[in-house]
Length: 157
Image 1 (spheres, rainbow, N blue to C red):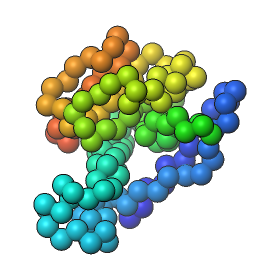
Image 2 (cartoon, rainbow, N blue to C red; image 1 turned 90 degrees about the horizontal axis):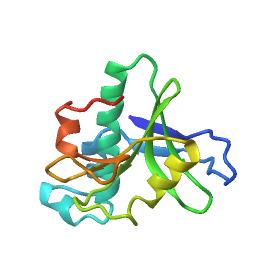
Image 3 (tube, rainbow, N blue to C red; image 1 turned 180 degrees about the horizontal axis):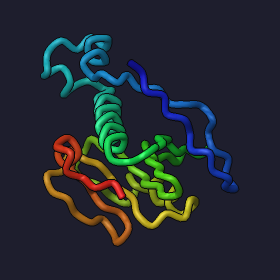
Image 4 (cartoon, helix red, strand yellow; image 1 turned 45 degrees about the vertical axis):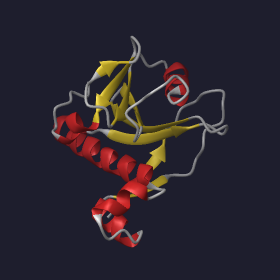
């Protein structure tokens, strides 16, 4: 019923948070417990981003579990608040993923992703959004539409 994401255990100069993040794995249960009774209630719910984040994490975790031998799932957050929503680790390979409910992405919204990639020495990262088309934000960051993930049309590594 609950997915517990542990923080990524990296040895970097900046202090990282040690508290896990918890997600209800069933968005229907989450919405019911939040008092949402109609689909239209979700559009104005102030925590809509949390529901979307949990849904994306569940789909990606399912894809990774079906395609990789022993994937690990973490999040990354520094003591100063820089954060990446999901890290999928497959041995030494790590894919950092930032999740945004908006379709538009700017340099400010991915500052945490950039810092994570620099701190961990990663060469590529994803931003999952509600955008309709896949595109490159930069040479090392790709915008991935949520619909591709929901359809299972993404290659993780």
